[in-house]
Length: 233
Image (cartoon, rainbow, N blue to C red; front, side):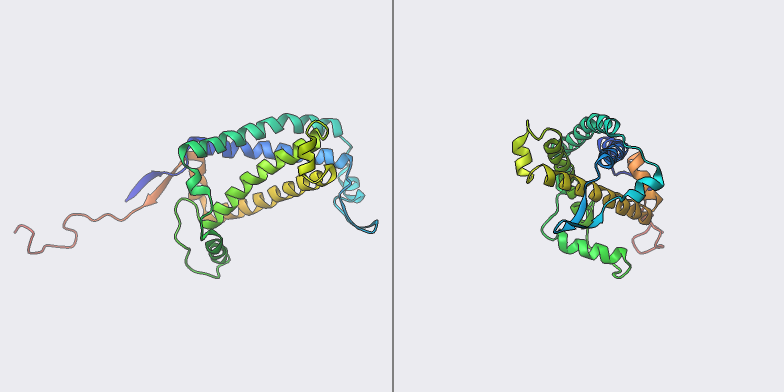
């Protein structure tokens, strides 16, 4: 038989789906800011070995310098990003959901087993509750990354007013590098997340929209094994 089981709360679903376009706009506007001064590169003794987004990239896409537009969007949606993240973390603390998200003692060992299973090297998955070990680590990491983006973002936005934050980030230039590295981390997380959703199938994806999952269960019908000595004649 089939039963309907609640899987994801309304708060989790709303914060999840709201965060997707917000983060997309944050990355897009952040790139507009970066493209206005694309100074990130890998250099040794003053010799540039590699530049992220070389000039040919801008020439090919015909991207104009839109610093003011990028800053306006970035600093506006920063508030939505921060408030949405704060609301989600607050919900997990109040509801107790954090217990299912925080990595456990064996999570890193089991996460490797999950990876081997996804690569079809290992047949069975380790025991799991709502989230497996790899998901626990990934979802906890993305929350910490969000906090890191806000922290480094403040160091870049107001390096004088928040001089102590800038100092903790290793200075203005290093804060920019950390901020940019976290953005790359979001992109990798998103790509892996999409692949995992595809592998998990439509039923798992639809539960993040509806909040419910239809589960197939076995049912024992009274007397289905046939008559026995305890059954009435």
